[in-house]
Length: 262
View (tube, rainbow, N blue to C red):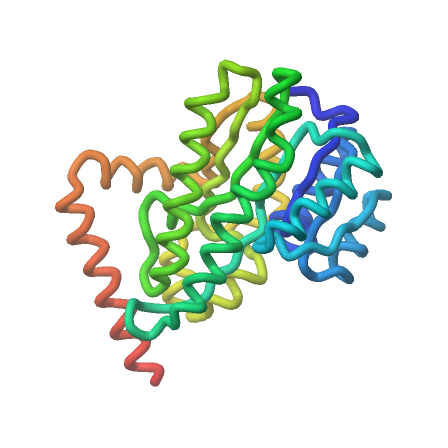
């Protein structure tokens, strides 16, 4: 896909990967709508690229519909939808309140559904459009210590795969971003040196943004941010029992590290 003049909506674009992608897409000539819950952050990124900011709680369907309507009024029909907003909260099964589960489900999963439903009919009617969903390697390989994040990111992987299988040949392309460790505010919130060590090689948001641009231009589905991710995925696919054993060892190390720092 040629990004020149493409109307592009990027959620979670006020910081991290989203902000870097907003700048990278704009540098390619895309007309980027910068969407974030934090209005001040969105406005700063929008000012940097000479565009417009939209404050939106993407976990609220009515708010998403209003945001897409405003973007269409300002820019025209959406060519590229990049569902990038996400949160990482909660810990294990019994220590995570149900309302935390619900909020993460709303933002990490249903936000993708809401915004896709808002732009999809026009994409399908014209036989042209692009969807980018941000999951995580946690969506393929799980993550120690964050049950809610792992479960919701698995759902994003399933959603992206289904959309690609069903609508690719009808002109609506899909890419799935599944990053390993990226130096973003989310990684800082996870906390702990051990957690960061197990996130794999740490990339900058700008490095990831370049990978996303390249993948979209090539219309490639899976965007991995490090070659080691493919190796880890191979371990799981080829011998899941061995992979589970290894992941249990990592969990034991994390539990020990937390006990030592308590």
